[in-house]
Image 1 (cartoon, rainbow, N blue to C red):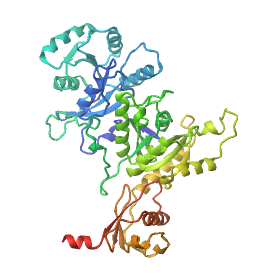
Image 2 (cartoon, rainbow, N blue to C red):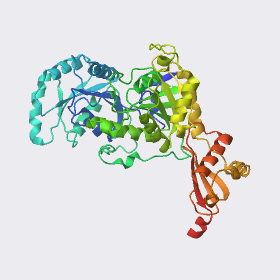
Image 3 (cartoon, helix red, strand yellow):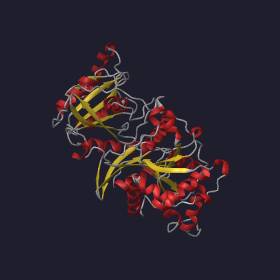
Image 4 (cartoon, helix red, strand yellow):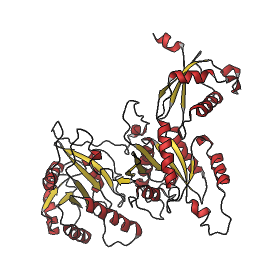
Length: 495
C-alpha cells in the first residue's frame, strides 16, 4: 500500500496542469490570523476562524494559484514551543512536520500587539531551519498601521510584509516574494492572468453549500471520498492515522480534539481513497465554544460531500441516541454507510472489568435493532489502535464504492419488474398503483424512477417492498436506494 498526502507527487498535477512551485508553511503563535491568511490564499473558508485562540490544531492543506503559477500551502496550529500540555505539544509536533515538508515559511505575527517572547523564541527556531523565511505582520488593516510593523524587525527576519489577511491588503506583494524565493519555479497556466482569491463562506451563514451534490454519470471517478463520522472521542482520528499509516491527526483523550476536517489520500490496489476525519458531532446544546459549533457545521458539510461514511461506534458504550442521529444524517443525505464498531478488543480479549467477552453475533443484533434504517450497511468490528480488521475495512470500502456507482440497464430492470408479485406488498388498495415501467436515472446514490398509472405518492410499505426486491436482485450493498415515481400522463400534459 502506498500513501501520499493531499498534494503529494505528480498525481495532483492532472493532464495539462502545471506542477506546483513548492510548499509554503504558515506558522505563528495562537490567534495571530494564520487560518484567515490560509483561507485568503486558497479562496475558501477551508479553515475555521474565530476569536478563540488555538482553534486550528491539525495541519490543513490547500492550493494557491497566482499569476498563472501554483503553490501548495499548509496551515498549522498556533505554536508555543515551551508549552508541555498534551494538545499544545501535539500541535507543535504537527507544525514540525509541516516545516519539514515546506520549501518556504511565512511566520505570522499580530501587528496590533507588542512583540512577545514566544514570537522571539519561534523566530529563532524558524531561522535555524535554513529555509526561506518571510515575516507577515498581520492586521495592518489601514495604511496608518503599516509603520508599526517595523518594530518586528527585531525578530531578525529580513523579508517583512505588512498585510491584512481579513481584507487582502499586502497579499499580492507577499505572494510575489514567496514565488521568488521558492527553490523551483512552477509552470504557468494557460491564462497567465492573476487569480485573486475571493472568500466563499460555508460557515458564516451561507449554508446552501451543505446541500447534497452528486457526480454526473459521465465523469471519470478518480477517487472515493470517505468521511469518518461519529460522536466525540470514539476513535476517528486514531482510525485515520491507522488507515494512512501516519500521525496525520492529533489524538488525545480529550473529547473534541479535532475541529477542522483533516483529509489524507491513500492508494491501495490501484484505487484512491481520500479519508476525511471530521469533528465529533454532538447535540447543539452540548456545544459551547463558537469554534466547536462551527466544527459541527463543517463536519456535516464534509459528510455531505463524501461518497462513503464510516460510522464509528465505541464498542465499550454501544449504540447511543447520538449515534443514531449521526447515522441518520448520513442515510438521509444519500451517503453509502459502513458501520464500524471500534475498540472491539476492549470488550473481548482485552476486557479488564471481569465480565465475559462480548459475542459478536449478539452485539451485531443489538446494533441492527438500534439502527434499523441502515439495514443495508455492512457491520465491521475493528480496533484502530491495534490495526485489527483494517484489511477487511479496505475490501469492504472497495465493494461499497463499486456498488454505489452500479448502473442497471432499463431492459434488465423491466425484466426484473415483470417477475415481482406486488400482491405480496402490504399496501391498502386505495394506495396501490400500477407500475408501467422503471428506469435507473442516476448513480451515487442509485436513484430509480417509476412510471405509474396515476400521480400518487408511493406508500412507504410499497417503497420498502420494492427496495428489498431490488437489493435481492442487484445487491447495492452499503448504499441507500432512492425511488421516485411519476405518472405516465405527466409528460403528455406538459406538452
